[in-house]
Length: 137
Image (cartoon, rainbow, N blue to C red; front, side):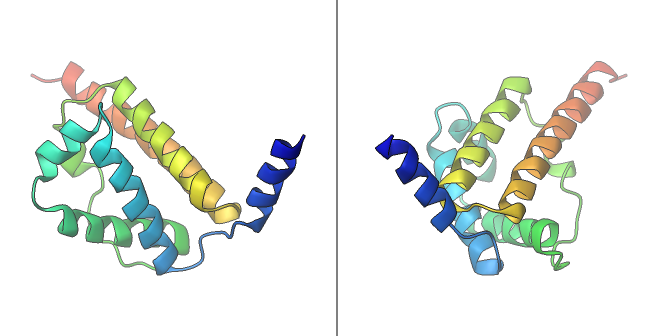
């Protein structure tokens, strides 16, 4: 019972994502976990290598655009992923880490929107990658 009360207190005392600093906290924490993950770490570290600062900056602007409606990201989010050697289980793990990270930092409408959007993006990226593989000439 005490654990339930503490969890409710934690949830209600957490703030929602409000500004770019919150987005940066979310992105930095998430990719810190991704880099250490046994399944996803080798993929991300292998592709990004020593360009993590550049990648994180791009993710800040992407999520700021998606969540805060501040149009700072320009580009195609899918294009860099189109040729990645990933399967459905990679996307499922990515969403699992994303949601756990979000739940550890934020609570509210925008945090929920972030989790929903992340799941939809993962689903769409997986579908597109599989489609490309199956329809190569």
